[in-house]
Length: 140
Image 1 (tube, helix red, strand yellow):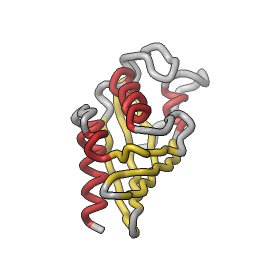
Image 2: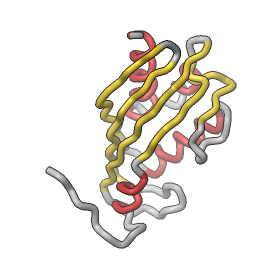
Image 3: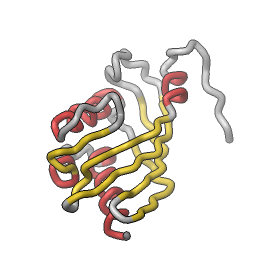
Image 4: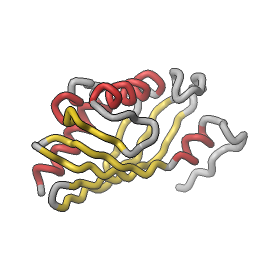
């Protein structure tokens, strides 16, 4: 179990904290499929998805709160923070700090991540980017 946990943490660290797109080749299966409607199947589509974050929120940092594994699946709970300084999902740069959380499940095959599901706190980021015309409430 520890190996699959270490792999997902290493993947997230390299891809997002270090902005290393070669992590996709090292961790993602050629037949990769995400159940996120923004991500088409395959490594190249996942690379394009990650690149959109690198361009739109270049200082995006994952803060992994929890990692759980069972068999060939691993679950992460992550809080993401960064500054929206580039175009992102059709929204022009706002210069605003953004935070959102995700719960991600990856399934492994042949030592690589082949399938992905996620739940994304879209309301937080949409509100922070001004898509709803209201300021987010911060909890201390």
